[in-house]
Image 1: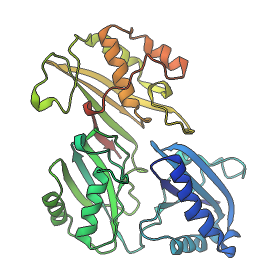
Image 2: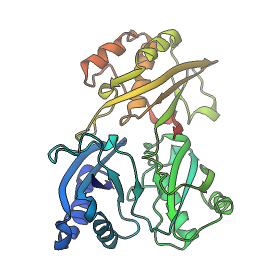
Image 3: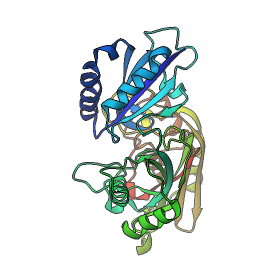
Amino acid sequence: MMDIFFIYVTAANESEAKLIARSVVEERLAACANLLGAIKSIYWWEGEVCESEEVALVLKTSKARKAELIDRIKQLHSYDCPAIVCLPIAAGNSGSSEKRPDIRCLNLAVVLHSSPMSTRYKMKVTYDGTNYSGWQVQPRHRTVQGEIERLLAEMTSLKHVRLESSGRTDTGVHARAQMAHFDLEKPIDPKYFQRGLNAQIDRDIRILTLEQASPDFHARFSAVGKEYRYFIYNGLIVPPTKRLYRLQEGRPLDIEKMRTAASLLVGEHDFAPFAANRKVPIKSTIRTIHSFYVRKHGADITLEVQGNGFLYKMVRGLAGFLIHVGMGRLEPEAALDILDHGKRTAKVQTAQPHGLFLWKVFY
């Protein structure tokens, strides 16, 4: 049985991720001649892994050399280094050194970038994304992750506390229940720490829950599905209290046609035609939608979609398509034609971000 060491690097773009990976891994590990003997193979993943634009470098080593490799990697990295995850090879992949292991088929074993004596905490976060450049930390931009990490560092007197989330949300997108985790070497009282965070952070971000988590819990890798909701106000005058959280469409929308189109999208499909192109290779664009409901209450229309994962801007693409169906520009059956075509066309428009909410993460 071989072991795989997955060094997971997330960056603002592909070029930056590759630069980090090469600098942190290839150059620094190559400086240890004895360590290179423990590495059997090196694999690259480029593009989307777990719904994010990132590059992953995987080191494959023998079980006998595993401990040595782990110790050396820990010595070479600071606490806030890219996450290092130990994963067993999936059955069927161990017989060939040429075939790249499928990360999506592997079971998460342990995250190595934290201290063995650290305690893991998980939090549920809700936020109004109007005034933020999305969730993920970005240089010279105000983000939700950046605001929480800043306070975590201040309250713990640490240089940096790394916050891992279930996934990114884009600029202007909101969250009812984003999930995240972080590690601390010194234990805290979650109840009072939660109060402290909420007392200091801006009111458009709230920490709903904060509790100790199992060491093998990972906000992203442990997730098995998500629910998103997209809100539309189908009327001429949007109430001021809803203007930041509804896409306004003044023309009447045919709800029954929208429901028919949504039902045709349920199941496992290649959803590339509904996703935005990041101009980076993607391992797979096949996703499964478990349910897709279109609900109407007065002028409010809500699109509720659950699935095992979503591509970049996929939910907004689905929303834009259903709106066009509701306006009569497309027939519901166009959903099947778009899926069969396999590529993005003008039939799919990306809906504006402010109507979208990350509603729930399933574990």
